[in-house]
Image 1 (tube, rainbow, N blue to C red):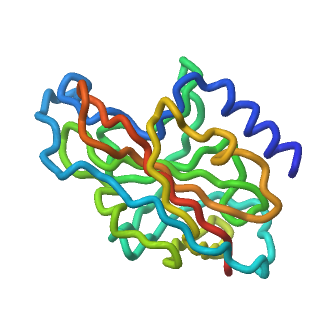
Image 2: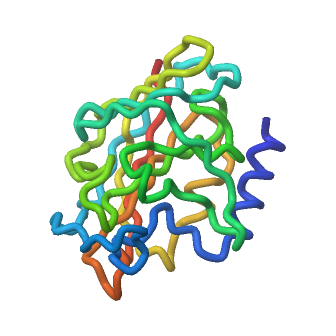
Length: 207
């Protein structure tokens, strides 16, 4: 397992532009729609103490449903995301902006290591699955249903907003001694047709 997580980090470090979500721009939309008029997504960086390491790591099993009650998210099925041709991490397409994607080169949610989920805040077509990410607070739960019938419950520990050019690759993808979860979307005021930031939720397995 440790080898798999180290490989994940090495792969992520090769990515030249780890963005986590695509641009909200009309020029990139297949239907030529206008950009979303939603308020720019932003969060106040905040954190809480890590949850006690009492939850037993789970065996590998792919995620099939994600629920983030405080953000109004109940997404199923999940998309499988890998690497794009340019070496960056894939993101859901504009047509699938209502879905959450799981980065398959990492661990499955509940295994030891950082499992990574990615979704859009908005696209040129309008608000997307993580449009209410700013409502999430440390201490709230994220629930991931898995293909084997089990459920992994995570507690949010930290919210971070950071420029895409300063994406914290090692912090997001680096090795951990316990099962953790990352949820990544875009943030910030649209500049030159793109949202310049990423919003990242960090969560610990609690059940």
